[in-house]
Length: 258
Image 1 (cartoon, one colour):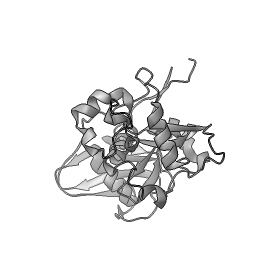
Image 2: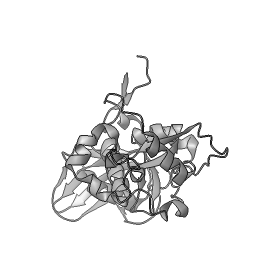
Image 3: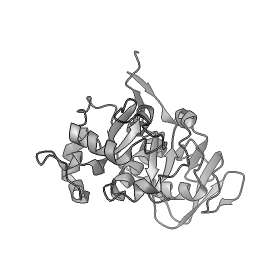
Image 4: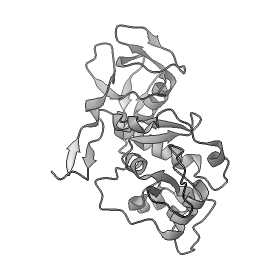
């Protein structure tokens, strides 16, 4: 199993002050990541004692607007102090292989989504789902954490089989193409429900798939059985912590032979 640093591909680096001595984090800037997005993501992996602004090193203060974020070194401007959260994300790849999705979960998601939620690519052959996976948003391997945190309370559509846990409700899943499923599980891509359900990419490996900056389709969002925003928000928070906090979490390539 190969282990790689997520920080190697970053083209934006964020520091605690103008001296650029204390690294807070950073990211690879995908299409659609705005200045306002950077501010909101900073609030996920940092805590501030007072209001703050960001400034491009050698440049001006960054407005909280929808302009495309530019590469460079950024630093915090504040009269208070900033600390990096000690919150640890729930990584998937380092766990034993998760159980396969149960059949009712898979079938319900296929029927609801009809194609890849991230890319919009449809399953064109009726009854054939080759290349599409029913993916859990909150991973099955962490069912104990799911129960401890009361995530079952978010579910309004229980699993078809009463004996199945609420973690197997179709509301905790989306249909994804196989490649998109790998990206989603590794937190290389996520959905920001607080920015009009925008698809946010954190890895240049996603570029050929044209996902960055897309928005989820209205038909999916209007479905009463779709995933609740709280679960999408949980996944997005994990993606920010994994990719942006400090040097980023290591990427475990479970398909590597070395």
